[in-house]
Image 1: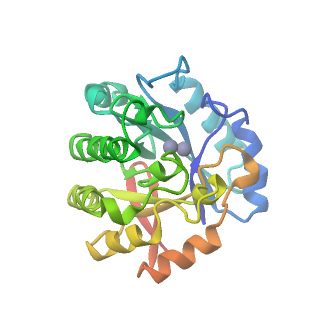
Image 2 (image 1 turned 90 degrees about the horizontal axis):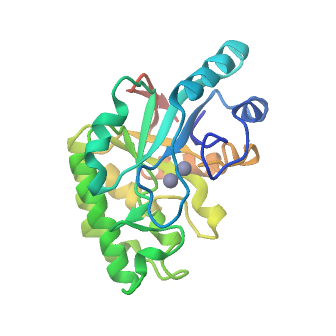
Length: 263
Ligand SMILES: [Zn+2]
Ligand SMILES: [Zn+2]
């Protein structure tokens, strides 16, 4: 199996070196990992900058590929923060760069940070959640570079604990999924949810089921690790969930092209 969502110290919210993931990945029996460090242009609310030094990033992946050649497949990805007002950066950032996999994620709503809860500033959790899904619809429709959309219902972590219910927003989620499918793009099953004291992975099973019913086939598995200990976290259960939603394959990307792997 492949873990397609892994952060390293090339992300400002992670301190572990790329190389520290390699032996744990091999020990866990993973066939490959795809590094997806953060690029969030104009990330709101804090002075933290989420950006990578592209040549350093690529250089480090290449060094590890050479060193661990036949033991683990190592892929170069990125988690690109999408926001409506930086759409043009989508084109300029990716010029003269190439990645195996681009995970597009929503980490802000209406130019306000999710992580610190700022998106509900002076409004209810419900209105903040609508901002989140409206931004998501705009971004999946107008961005083109991404392969898959990250953690669709991650908002569940940030509205006041336990109050988010996906069923309340299913028409928005359905619109997102339809756009993604029409554009030939996919989603991820991100197993981090249960590490954030939720009862489910991202997205929760009802959304995965809907995605499948609408014709979605492209889905990657990712732990969203910021620590080598959580590589492949919950993958056995994730496979079970995918199978019970009707999936026979999961997806990996090499040089931006989806490849399907039997579950
Ligand atoms: Zn993310
Ligand atoms: Zn992530």
